Structure formats: C-alpha cells, structure tokens
Length: 174
Image (cartoon, rainbow, N blue to C red; front, side, top):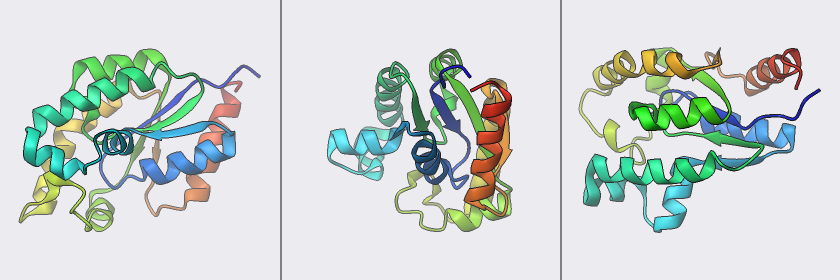
C-alpha cells in the first residue's frame, strides 16, 4: 500500500462533492477542504456577494488563488466549485497534483438538488433546467478530460459512492 494522494472531487453543482468529500475525508482520516467554503471564510462574505461585487471574473481569480494553495497540501480531500474546471490553469493544477475524481449526476437529479439556489449565483435564473443543461454541455468534456475516474451519484447513496471510491483506491494500491 502506498501513501494516499490528495483527492480532488470535481463535477457539477448538486453532484454531492462537499457531502461525499467530508465523508471520504473522515473515512480515510484526511483533512477536508471545500474551495467555496475557504473563499467564504477568508472573505467573510458569501459567494453570491462576491459575484455581485466582483463579478464572475473576480470570483474566478479568488478561486484560482485558493486552489493554488490547497493543491500544495499533502493528503487532503478537496471538493471544488463546479466551475473550477473552466480555467485551463485550474485543470492543470488539479491534474498534476492529485487523484481527480469526477462525480457525475443526471440532469433531473441535479435540478432537484440545486433548488436552494441562493448560494449558487449562476442558477438564480428563470429556467434553471436550461441553464444547467448548457453548463453541462460546456463542462462535462472538461471534467472528463482531467478525471482519473468517474463515479455517478445517481440515487445518491453516500455509502455506496464511498464504497466505490474506497474500493477503487484499494485496487490502485492505496
């Protein structure tokens, strides 16, 4: 068994990155981070506030700054914001520094899981379904391009998703 690499969870809003990440970190006895939570803790304001004041570009700058720091930490589980993969720099940081796990979710379940939209600034729109579909069309190829492995959170039994990830890690010699 070799030492566990840092594990980076990527995927769309509502895929369960934060929930799975917290449980996985606990099970593996690793430290858990969430890029959005780190940004909110450091700024003292919500992601929505950052979007309102600094715009999407300002938020993405903050996201890259936090990511650069977190990928340097050894042996962590990191849940990333859904849009972190839009930046080639961020994709390179993730792919080069740890095991990238893509958590996917069917669109219908994603819609149900993202109904509390106030902390998801890009989903504060009339037609959430169309917006999510457009985002997925753009982002899924990017998630797939850097993922070492993909797991579906369809039906979302955290226990089953965790077991699949842990089994995969064991198969890889971790």
